Length: 560
Image 1: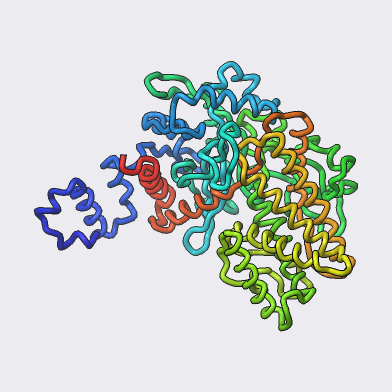
Image 2 (image 1 turned 180 degrees about the horizontal axis):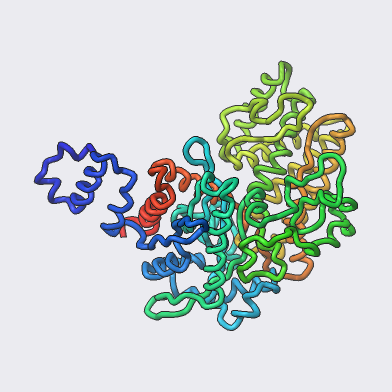
């Protein structure tokens, strides 16, 4: 703003933006930069969504952007087609009708089919996403948004248009829509009721939008559009917190299982007589699938009309399950095994890691795979010594795919040259190969998998489970802390099982689990959390929402 201070006043006054710049400079001079959202709003440079104060208990008010208000503004601005992955209003009826036709095969018990089945072409599918970002002093801030599972695809897809498109392409300001933010100090410990009240208000509104809908200007006609919530996206800690789950990852039995050690909200895996990593047809956990609710008190989102099996609301996030979970375990242990065998030359452990990194970098350049890390260390592998299980903790989850690709290539070449077969390395190679195939199928597909792609993904998933467990068993027999078995491995098993179940039932289209993944939402959370660090701590919630509306307007409309 100070750059305008010495500008030619005759020229400056002729600028269309002179008034805006003058107001901004005035706020800069008076130390009120963090209130610039009001200036942009007054000049039509922010989404005109009103801030609504809701009662969160004990006399406290909290600002939110109501879903109905957001939908009305988007409809007025001709942006409602974003909710069915299009820019054209005329595609609404065919797209929404086909979406719900496929979803009926996925979850026929969802309330939408009984209560609103007569006008599915006017029902918008909605997902809720929640996650905790980082604000000032490394404190947390809960960020809640709504979004559609349908979007404009993913850059790696080679699928046909009939598969519909995942919601990955495009700036997240234009594909995710903020409901509210809440700093951790406002809802932690004795203030737990605050977050519960926020979620209850959201649930009540979504229930009303499901039952009564909202009147929207769709093109030249006014019509009632309905909203059906199909799931909560988020990592496992958020799912456990919002859903009041009593069975979650933190319940994983360390020593001996008990009747209270179950860690899966969909089944009783982890309890006595329910081994969680058994992938056989007669695995005992299968008979307990959706037979016992994972809470003593329902979470606030349970009041939203949804599937009769309310556990289905809580979706496994493939990004944290694989890139930051199971495949990161595979990648981390795989890199250490190369050192165990001395396959990259002599020297201490760090020297060997340096050599491995150079090979990894060369492989990524040859295979045209992006690599974000700039080196390998014990710290990055969370491996202080042989008393710990290594795991890749690199910042970018995409690097997990890069490492798994490298390991497959390296081991393929090495195993082929062995005079005597090595079952340990062979099973590790198969685990890497099937992991890469699993990701390749999903990331090259649309929102719905064809039968051929579904079969390939399910087969690759089961192949991975078999080879990974064999590799972990071989490491255990060698008395090596490699290839850890974690609750996320069981979560992956449910994802694979859903694919196999859809294929065996003869579904023409099966839900791509990437539709529940939070890869793009991680980017979104970072952006919104960043805004919270630029506003006054005394009114962080309200000012963050105002600044969001400015940014959303810019990315939705650009120079329109």
